[in-house]
Length: 441
Image (cartoon, rainbow, N blue to C red):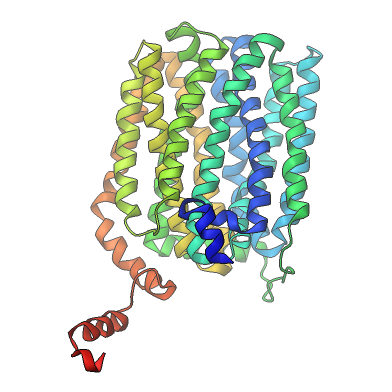
């Protein structure tokens, strides 16, 4: 049966043979389209109401800084409680947040302090949702060899939504305004909640050894800090989020003031980035092994950096759209490769805590970068700010590139234990079989 499914779905989509993963994939896909519609609508709304680049960064900061503070605690929660129940709660709370925001926009009573407050609330919810969702993937994809495919398909889903959501939002904003986009997002959470409730999972077994929260946090930090490959991967994600993610915050400025377009132009730019990201995620999905992902991270980080610098000085829409393809590809392949490698090498009993550190680096550093970029852009302009971000991303990958061979040696025993690479004994046995006379084989 497994072989039949493999032949039907193909290696690129092999994680979809698991029922629980299929349910999550469909529900999450619908919800993510709504999420991207709300994000575009909110960015356009803030810039329309305030004309302030700084406040664009401040709203992003408000929605993401809670992850920097709370994600490590969320990781402890993900290791101690049933992850599906945690996700149902976070998705339900996100639906309430979106509904409140939609009501304020549609009744035209929205003010900037409402947006900032509700962004903080969403950030708190997301801190627990992201860490738990990252750790939950391994429960939906039962075989470890298909885990990397599941992560890659998650990334492709995220970026397919980033392609579809902003494009729809750009058109809807022009016709009916931002409020309808946010309302659609509120309704879309029903799909992911339903998918979680329909799953058939093994009974949850609580961890027998009970530690205090602080002790569990300390364990996760110590484990991640003392194992150089995990520390290096989390550092890359943090630096890419700090210097690279602000480009999406500044896009409304490029769309309106540099490319002289409207909300649909912003949707096209985000959509182009989504196309590149989707291509990157599918590129990772067709890979059969995690071997070689270290080099992939180096090349795609450099691709992202160069494309971002070039985009910062483009004043032509078509060239900007082309460069957005490359930035999307470079960023998602770098991020998803780090995620895949982390999920592969981490010990199972510390998965939630390590992935919470990944979430802290991914979501927690981005608001700091967005706030800094918004402030710097008001002083020196968005062009030079974005170019500087691209340059810093390129510089940040240099230490990882110089230490790649040493890091590879450190993870090789883990790969051997998981059967990803052959052990020395297996290699010697294979060699002896090849050199032995036919009658002894």
